[in-house]
Amino acid sequence: MQAVEEEYELKQVRDMAAARKRWEALIREEKVKVLTPREAGYAIQLSNKALLDVRPATEHEQAWVKGSTWIPIFDVDNRFDIGSLSGKITNYVMGGWWSGVPVLSFDSFDPTDLSLAACELLYNSGYKNLLWIQGGLEAAEEEDLQRDGPQPFKFAGIGGVSEFLGWTDQQRAAAAKEGWGYQLFLSARLVCKSFYCFQI
Image (tube, rainbow, N blue to C red; front, side):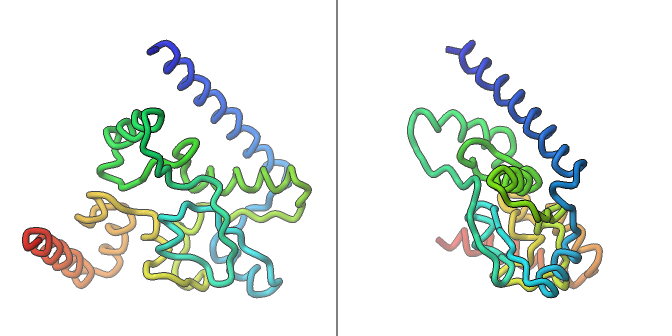
């Protein structure tokens, strides 16, 4: 059984490496054009381009671009059976408890992989004028794109203990930019959430 699992994991690593090479070729050959989030915002405003949001539901529920179309390529794996249990345990042990990143169906891809996988699927389906937002919505500043949803784009994909404590890269960058006010906000939130948890 262990040999079968190791062979499966090795196949996944090989498949992911092959996919990344294909995606790099799409960009290198300019079949997919790379835009910053700000450039994407201008493109949407000036040319009425459609934005396809391929992020999982957990991120999309927090923030999305006004007028975008949401079609997740990978989504949260809500199955609870013997086949999915080992993946959920591995994800938790390997940092899911800290980052809050859930197990996604098929595999856990980062936002770059999701976007480029979508570009590859669209290109192979005949779409030729494709633009890719480098760094995904996570890289967007609030003024770059028109946002809907309760969270800023940068915070839509964070969670877990690190988000609760305010120790994610995004939160530390905001604290450095905003100064003491933001740090006090995070500290107050932590105290309030802790108090609420103890009251329940």
